[in-house]
Length: 411
Image: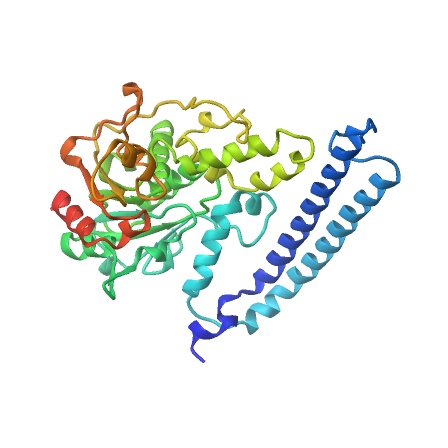
């Protein structure tokens, strides 16, 4: 049986503990939701609540607290036992490269609830790493000088995705924009893998530090950095540039180009729709406990409501509360060539298609950095904008036309 067909190839020893922690958290969350609904009904009859409006009291409250307490104690016990077993299990598990299926599953899980995974110390939380030839880079594991150049291309994926998904298929053939640029123009692609469920600005701080480190341990002098970013990756890039500037880091001095592929610079209406669900579910005492379902989505997802890139955009705010766009405007850097690729599934432009259709996830105006308030527009140069028709958000990664446009811009 090949590795790709072997289900055990998709598992790691730490996954057992991770799943136990997830199951414990899920059971506790469902119990709290049930108690909230129970108390909502009692409250309409005039019955007092427990310590909070969502808690019952008396024997009922004791039962709910017992369920939660037992669940957490059992979960902690099992997790502790599995932690002790992990070294032994790791010796037994299959060695070799992580499967594409496992990487994709973890990327999706982190995008949806990565902030919760990290807060809980769950092993499934993805740390931010730089990768070269599918191996993690770092001071202790730099690339060989004979395999790289001084022109480094930083490649950043979007929400719920990972670095290995930059390679896709078109007409049955593999296509990877970063590898093509590397071969044709002498770039060394370095891929970023990160937890897309964290706040964009949190990932921005992490990326800024990793790039600062990379410039120090790269085995040859870094003469040029360029960035190719898809979707949320573009927001993380802008955030990292701001963080680097605030910290006085040197790597932005050699940053020459940034290409944004389908980046929601001004947010996505799908997240704003999710925020409406929060409001609707929270409007009655009977549906209010179920609002917690909508609030399972990660901080990274809620940042996409308006395109948050700075700490100030979310700190001190309830991210599930419906409120107007109050972002701090962050313009494009003046000394770096910035390009944007926007896509639309429509065959031609129209006012409705631009605002409502877009690429299926990101409206055209958002990807182009355009805003109804001109002071918030990002003002990409006209010849630094490209519009791909009959193209979806994910199809940007496999479009030969997009690949050719990148070559045209950077040649």
